Image 1: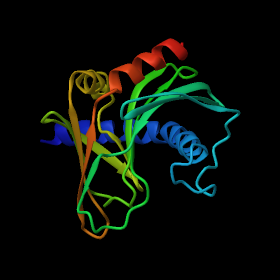
Image 2: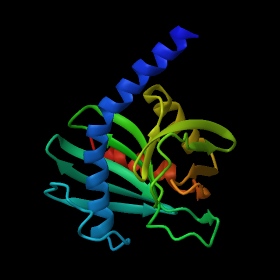
Image 3: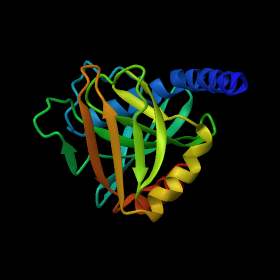
Image 4: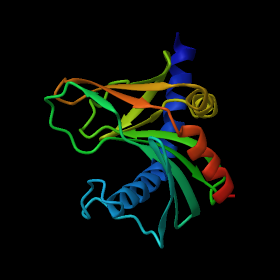
Length: 195
């Protein structure tokens, strides 16, 4: 039992280390979504970005390319087709998969849920019923294990539906349902445009 706790602690340290890098990614993504008129205010978009380019929309997913201090960053984003409960006031909701060529990282999976997540909660994202745990920071969540990122993206490409379940600081449970139609084409566009 003690070795499991130590391993989780070490893993948590690894996750925390990646949060700084992912925060920069999130800020650039928010900037791009704001520039595209998708509901983020300019106060949230504080990333240093020379340019953000919409590479195209593929059914429910849009491919983006931009850059920050570490170099070229490309990602896909989508908004849920269904959210529950319907009577909850939330900021815009997004799911992203990010490739940072400047840092040599691929398939960073994250979501922006539109409300502050409960700090000790473990949101879940599932693709066609296969679940993955996430870690939280504010209104964002990332896959808990970096080793899950590639299998998760492969599942997205092969899947039809993705569901994100989270709990707010107020204790409200939410479920966001995304169509995966277009995710493969959007990821292919990233591969073509962001080497």
